[in-house]
Picture 1: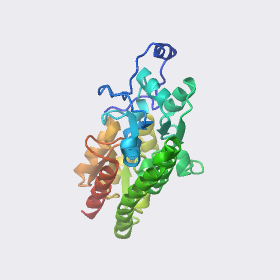
Picture 2 (picture 1 turned 90 degrees about the vertical axis):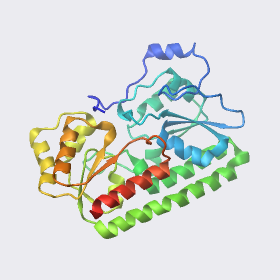
Picture 3 (picture 1 turned 45 degrees about the vertical axis):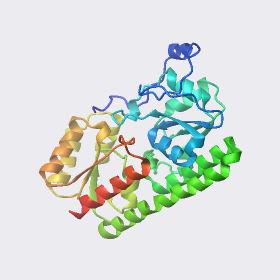
Length: 310
């Protein structure tokens, strides 16, 4: 999918907000996938900015949570998502909202404010405690950081329990079970670090960096390249040449490639990697169709390990 020339998430217009007053009841996601039945009174209504967080809520809330994921199409670029009145309506009904934060999905906060929402909001970046490095920019893709995801699971359980005290113990139990299933992923990262720590890799965007850092790998991509790709800007010829040299000179063991924001410059990097025999590991920002969070991340870590072992 071509990268949007602007990585800022689009806001709904004032006219759209005015239209909301006349909208009928619906809890659709914004991808046009079809209507959903209204949540039963006994369920906690939850809205997640992406299906990554929506899936985690479903693991913890089970049948007691009615979850709407605003962005759920694997072909959509979350950075350029255009929110609509259905999203606004879903947020207005939510008791719990899970957003990524860190500038990734600012449209959620803006829509909550415009609708005067009283929902409890879980901001994943704030939960993570991650901040921008000195002189650098925050990597907001915290769902690739498994210790952070464990913290988010606890916060989700607490929020659901506050909304539904009778089932609080169940939510806590489900969160503990979910966190237990994260442990094998961290163990896989530790094994990669033991076998390949210090080896170089390349990226197209910072999406998988927390996972790569946990594996002890060194990102050798020129910062100007990955930043330009993430912002939808052109890469200078000099920076592109330096990036392509990582593959032709065999300076890296793998290219970790964000499939959801590919374009001419990232395709050149991918082609150079393949021509040099450097394995390409595709990743995405949202759940691929038919995957849950744990299965998706297991596949990502396994693919990385397989690439490095070649």
